[in-house]
Length: 221
Ligand SMILES: [Zn+2]
Image (tube, rainbow, N blue to C red):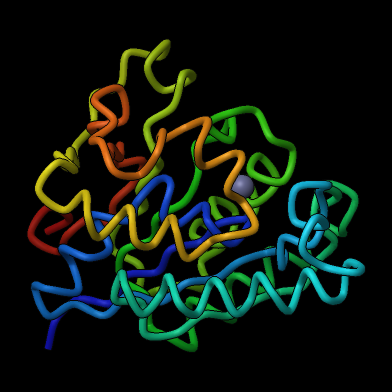
C-alpha cells in the first residue's frame, strides 16, 4: 500500500495552485491523497458574480473542488467550514485539534501545507500553516513522518532549498483542467497562470521544503 499524503490548506484552489501536479504524480504512483480545507472559500466579490450569496457561493465552490479533486486524484475532501478571510479570529487550539483529528482519522504520513508566511502573506494561509505545524508537533500525530512547506519568499530568504521540485510542463494539461474546474476563481487564476492554454513559464515549478521529519529508529539507537 502506498503512503498517505495529507494536504492541509485554507481555500478550495490552494491545492491546485501549489501542488496540483505533485498530487497527480503521487496518485499515479499509487499513493492516497486526502485534503483538509479550513474554509469553503465563500468570501470575495469574484465568486459572487455567479452566486446570490455566501451560502450559494460555498456550495458552488464545494462542487468545483470535487471536480478538481477528481482530476488531481484526491480521494477525500474535508472542509472545516470556518469563515473565509477570518481564520486568524478563530480559536487557535480548536483548529489545531481539528487538524489532529483529520491526521489521525486518515493516518497521514506526509503532511503538506503553507510556509509560515502563507506564501503570499494571506492571513488564512498563515493561520493554517501555524495550526498545522502545531498539530504535527503536538505529540498526538504519531503517523506523521514528514512535514513539507510550500516554497515561499520567506523560505527563500532563509536560504532553504526545495526538497521536492516538480516540473509542471508535462502535466500542465492536468493542472490547467483542475484550475478550470475552480471556475468562480477565474480572475485570480488568469492573473497567475494566464489563459490556461499556453504553458506559463514563470509558474513552471511546484516546490516544497522539508520542514521536519521523524527521527528514524536506526538514528536514535
Ligand atoms: Zn488560499
